[in-house]
Length: 119
Image (cartoon, rainbow, N blue to C red; front, top):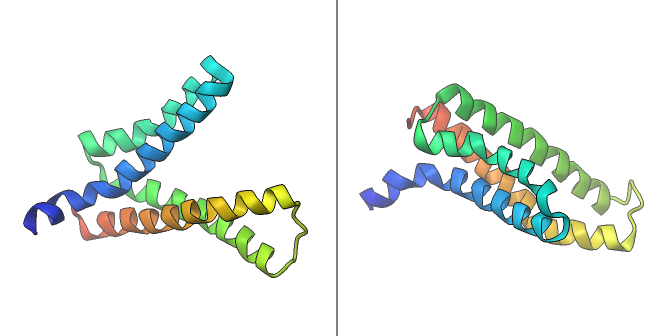
């Protein structure tokens, strides 16, 4: 149990790195070389794994909570039919729902780690 709690603080960073790698591979298949700047998004998360920084940790958490909150509002607007979405966009919103909730939870986890002074 102690081993799990020791490495649990790295789960949010590995989650975001896996999303960046997945995003890169999908774009790389279609666009080729223009996908390489996507890998730059992974630098702050790799830095947190190698040499943790509380300020960067808190900043990453706040940024992704804001982005996830924005997407959650998009889902609420869809449920309340405030904005009319096309059918293709509704399918995208449905499949992206798990990703949005996961991003929100992992962002809160990052903020919790920076408040608890895990690093």
